[in-house]
Amino acid sequence: MKMDRRGEIERLLGEPVTASPPGSFLPFIRRIDTERLRASAERFGTPQYCLDLDRLRERAGLFARTMRSHLPASECFYAFKCNDLPLLVKTLKEAGFQADVAGIFELELALRLGFERILFSGPGKSADELALAARNGDRVTVIVDNMDELRLLADVAAREGAEPALRIGFRLRGIRSPRAGGNWSKFGIALDRLPGAIRVADDSPRLDWAGLHFHASWNR
Image (cartoon, rainbow, N blue to C red; front, top):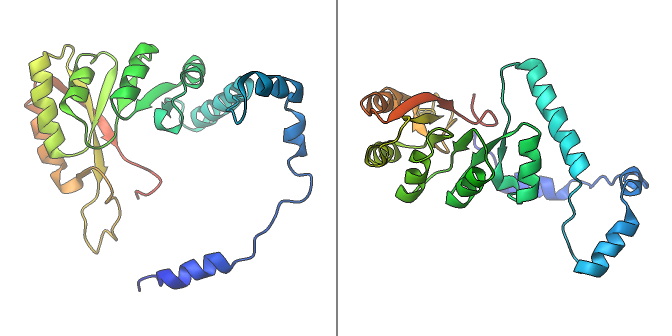
């Protein structure tokens, strides 16, 4: 039975809001050097964005250690779309994170900052973006979103003479059917088309199929 969207919205809007107890955030506020914030405000004006590098390093290290305690061979890639402030990105690179980018600006930034492993994802990549990836095949892995993009990438990689062969990964989605329950339907290559995509990659000497990509948040 389909969800009654109007009823669900009304329910959410009508739920009482639970406020945090008084003083809940004081421990965090007390950590802040208010004198330095005042001095910064006087110098640069307000509002302004403040970055706690020590806290960032601490949280990044905790995340990486937690992942590797369960998946020892795992690597952590930071998605530039969250915040592409170069100082923040450089700090995460120093903490051992690799780069996950979408779009030519983020790809160029990751290359300039010296990341050794870069996942280039995002739908609708242009020929110029794919050419830049092909020229940096020693560091970039392109996440292919559909068959048209795969064929375009094969042509671009051949034209650029990608050496070594450009690594690619296939972003997956499931077959749209009642049995599938509508899962895996947002982006990517349908599972029933994956064998054809693999054949195209195998027939392209400048492409190297290296893996699969999917979102665990809404894929089963």
